[in-house]
Length: 405
Image (tube, rainbow, N blue to C red):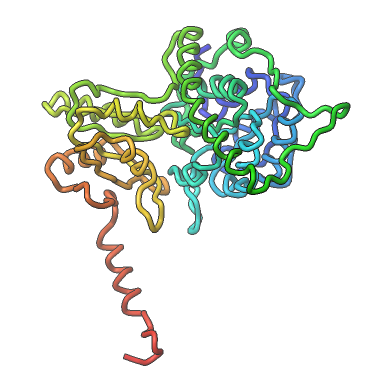
C-alpha cells in the first residue's frame, strides 16, 4: 500500500512484515527510528511472536543476533557509523559461521572528528567482513531490498547488510509502497535454517582451526560469496515477478547504451545523477550512469560488460581509503576494460551535498580534461582552506634535531 512515510518507518514496517523472531537493538543516529518503531510494534503485539532485545552496545546487538540465528531464529538488527565499527569483531564471526541475518546500515561518516551526516565510510570500512552488501538508491528500493535480503540471506546462509543513506533516505518523507503482509508471506517462506543448535544434540561452533585447515575454510567462504551473485540476480527477478516492480539486483544501468562516459556510484546520489544524465543527453553528450546495488560480492564480470566500449568512467567515491586513495574506484578499476580511463573522484564526505549542479560540473570537467585519470581528485574540496592548513602545519614543524629556526 502506498503511503507517505519517513524512510526509517517504511523500513521498520517492512522488516516487521518479514516476521523476524528476534530483533536486537542499540540506538545510534541515524538508524534509531527504525529500531524504535520495531520496539513499538513488538510492545503493541503488531509483531508477534518476536523477542525484542535491548542490549548494552552494538557489539552486544550483533552478538545476540549471532546466538539467535545459530539457534534457528530469523534475526534482524540495525546500526550506523561508529556502531558498525563497534561490531567489527563480530561481523566476520557471523559470516564465517554461515549464519543468515539481516542488518540495516544507515550510512554515516566515521570520526574523528565526530560527524553524524551521510557518506559511505562506515559500510565500506567493513567490505571484507564476509557480508553481502546491498545499497539502496531510494526509500522504495530500501523497502524492497529488505524483503529480498531476508530471502537472499536464508538461501545462501550468509548475513546481508542493507545500506541506505543516513538522513538523506532514513529521514526523508515520501510516498512508499510498503508491501502487504500477504505479499511478503507469499514471497518469503518460513525460515528453515540449514544448521541450528539443539540442546539434545550438542555441537561446538566457531572452534579453533589451525594452519592445516584455515586456508580451506577461507577458500570456501570466498567461493560461497561469489556463488551468491547468482542468487542476488535470481531473488531480484523473482521479486519483480511477485511485486510488479524492478528493484535490487546487481547493477542499475541508466542510459548506458551508446554512452562514451559513464558515472558509477552507490546510493541515493543515483536519483540526481539520472537527472543530470538526461540534461546532458539533451545537450548532445553521450553520458550514462551505472548504479552498483550489490557491492559485495563484487559483480566483476557484470561491471566489465556494462562498461565495455565506454571511453571514460567517472567513479563517485563517498568514502576514502586514507593512505591509499579510492575504495569504490579500486573495485571499478579491477573491472574496467583495457583502454578505459577511470577518473576517481571523492565528493560528498560527511554530508556535504552532492547536488545536480555538482554532478553536472563534475561530468563537464572530465569531458574538458580538467579532471584527469592519473590521480584521486577531491572534487568539492575547499583548496584555499586546505592549503592554509597545510602551510600552518609546515610552519609549526619542529626540526628532527630539535634545533630552532
